[in-house]
Amino acid sequence: MPNRSSREARQLLRDEASRRLRERSADQPAPPPSNVLHELQVHQIELEMQNEELRRAQVALEEARDLYSEVFHFAPVGYLILSETGLIQDANLHGASLLGMERTRLLGRPFVTFLGREERDRWNLIFPTLLQRGEWLSFRLTLRRDDGAALHARLACEGQGVRGGKPVVRVVVTDIGEQVRVEQALQDRDDRLIEVLDEFQDGYWDWFVEGSRTVISRQLRRMLGLPDEGLASRQSHEATWKSRIHPEDLPLAEATWSDALDGRRPDFEVDLRWRDTSATWKWVRAKGRVATMDGRGRAVRIKGTVSDVTELKQLQESHRRLEAREAMQRAMVRNFPGGAIGLFDHDLRFVLVEGSGEVGTSQDRQTLAGGLVFELYPPDHRERITVAMRAALAGKMAEVETTIAGQVVGIRAGPVTDPDGRVVMGVATLQVLNGRQPSGSGDG
Image (tube, rainbow, N blue to C red; front, top):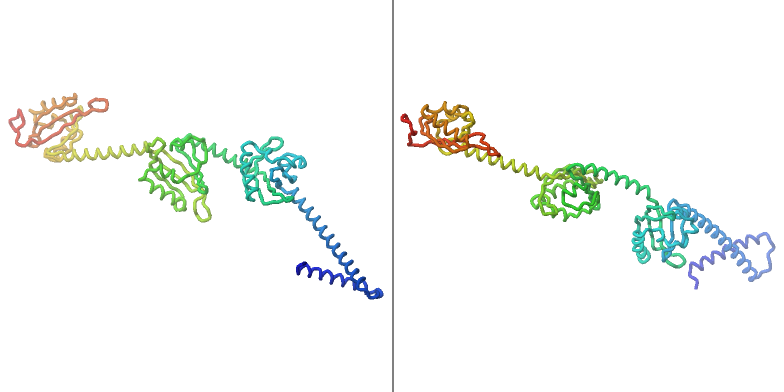
């Protein structure tokens, strides 16, 4: 039974036909009344109106078809329609041009014939997904033209189409050869830059925060104990680099990265200990700079260098220990119990006298420094003291007693040698001997 809208449409058509009949009959003699003739005349006008509407619809369809043909065939991108078996059912002129083949020869040909072995394996994984799930996917693929030339393309595929009652896959092919050439030129430039940087001791890194991808130079790979893969991008796994940093240095490293990512510290430098693949700890100095930020002020790209400062840290630690040892030795000398310590040269001159003991006063020790030994002691002691000092300069130990500022002082002398074993000066300890008289002296 026709629905209400159909009845209404038919009634409107009949009313319009009746109106047109009245207009045609207005200037003609009225025919004898006949319901059958009237109905036939109305029906004839209805058919004329329907034919007129069909002609308009046909013209509109032809215009739409012509417009579709123009858009389809002359579009600036390639357009393909693939059957459920992967055959090319239709292609526009630009698509045929991209594949390097006339359109008539292209139809019915398997799409995979335009793919290399590796790209074919990838396509064979993607195509069933498009058909089964009706998904829309966009991805890069390198096609092989009919003449064997490579075509770097982006394919936008939609698997929800139907043609002739069977599923089809619509494919839009865009030539991205120029984009690939620009990317390759940028990559070549980065390669040359890295080759230059590899001549230096510092390693180079470039971190793309979105996607957590990092470009690492060869020198840095060697420094950090990573496999040498040339200039390559690596996915930056947070747990991996955290496990390489010394636990004591990890809080500082995390705070530094956080400040850089949030834009609070666009330039940074941090020293930390890093464990390489041989489980050896080495000191590295990481310098970085935020190269790109987003609209919220967060880092999008950070790049910098890493230096191996292990030897520097070891040298600094040795210097610190040496300074501490020298400070301790100076303290020991200055606080030598009950006497003093002096260094004398081959001319028998004291070049240094230090101590907090009771050998005279600080003025007496000042007088000793720079003076000749045999000029500073009692005349009857000078020869024995000189013999003892020269014995020390000859590499032997010697002991002697004398008098300084009215006090009996015991002197013990020995050699000071360089790393090659040569005697460079002598050292003598001077200590008060309470209750003793100098041997061979009668004047005390």
